[in-house]
Length: 135
Ligand code: ZN
Image (tube, rainbow, N blue to C red; front, side, top):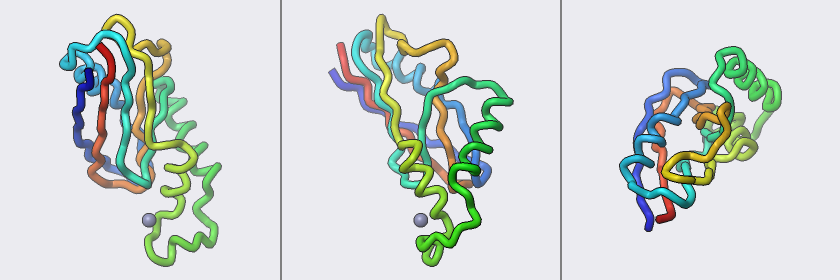
């Protein structure tokens, strides 16, 4: 069985983290699927998803890390048409999806693994697609 759903998020800053774990858990409960896999995907070339701890210090560290790994002060060619090359590079590096096991009706992830959307070209409205595959 496949359950498909999606929701929209409005981001506020150029670079920002949004914890979407509760929205995904609600959709899992709605789906009625107990065993299988959960795929979360953002159909955007300037955002990404990752799993990690929801702790304020670490979240700031993640944003600093993204800026450090992909410095803004480079002569990116894409910036000639669209001033967001760093966001595209971040989406390639950090990936626009996460896949997780679903066991006994629950996300089978670690205690410190929340699902984050990494906005790198906000503020924007982002679409989050969730596919739950199983039985
Ligand atoms: Zn662009």
